[in-house]
Amino acid sequence: MKQESLDPEPADAILVVEPDIELYSHMAAQIRSAGLSAISARNAAEALGLLGQRADIALVFTAVNMPGLIDGVALAVRVHRERPDLAIVITSAVVNLRQSTLPRRCRFLRKPYEPEEAIKCFRFLLDLDPAISQGGSTVAD
Image (cartoon, rainbow, N blue to C red; front, side, top):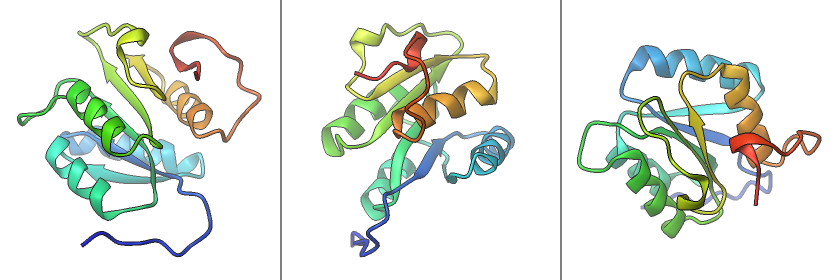
């Protein structure tokens, strides 16, 4: 059953889809130090389940390559179709996605990246820092 949120505050949780618990823990610490909350999913199926249950998720951060039947790009397309209000950030070291192939409010962040670069991208997509200059893969539509 889908949980309804009665809280009028805007959602700000970031769903980090990462099968490696060590990588998730490092990124979650960076997200929390930036004043945001982080939620973990180990694969796309788990992420989709959480998205169906939690109204507080505002952004999905996923790698392209993940275990299971759904990769990060397919996850982004499905998330955009089911919850077009969500921002999405996809990351990969081996795949170079063109911004034009991604859904609206979806950005590509090439690995390796600095955690601060990811946080800057998240804040921009969540409209938490309008002073961020428009440039690179973090430019909003």
